Image 1 (cartoon, rainbow, N blue to C red):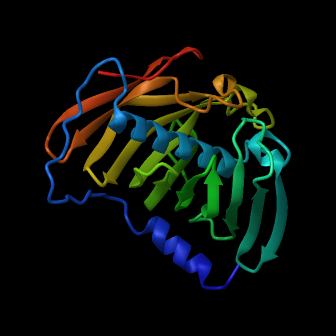
Image 2: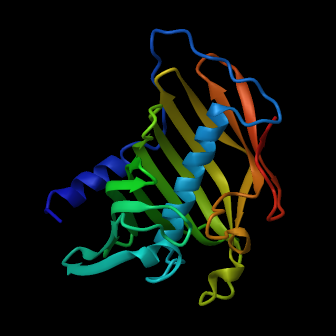
Length: 260
């Protein structure tokens, strides 16, 4: 990695802990709450799915050779600042979750205890959709909670092949609600997102979002093709003032998200 890349990645990922969406000069659509998840809820769901996937890598719950990382080549490089791990995907065949990936996921584990890890994406595509951004992870101490991690990203982007790209930012805090007592066995982990702020800007509108109730991710529910929360609520507020809630379900593995 070029010597300037790491400092730039730190600045990109950590510069913003409060977010604001830009507005364009066009009339913006009004999301209509209902059982079906509209395009705004779908964007929020995708943002959270990406965040979960990046966090699981940072937490080390996907060892080399497990989950979709199994279809990448792995290179480790020790530097004076820490350890750089590069996962390179060829895009020649689907991974275990059925998705075809190309490009690189690069994770830097710092020797600085105040900034534990940073992940950034280099020409990374999933089923042709380009995912961009840098994601910083900091281990923090919170009384009564185990393995608490703050995740921050600013100006990340999703660029589908069909158009409709959008930028987003997030600042979220998670902890191990269950599973902290078995550090060598992640299969029983239950990760709870108990603080979260998000923003999203698309060509036809923008929203900011925050947690209504904690969002729960159960490792036992995360089949290879089913990486998503199963419980909790996130409220989205458009720049027009219209609000809607994305409900992730009742906590069972079969739970499906719906809009309120």
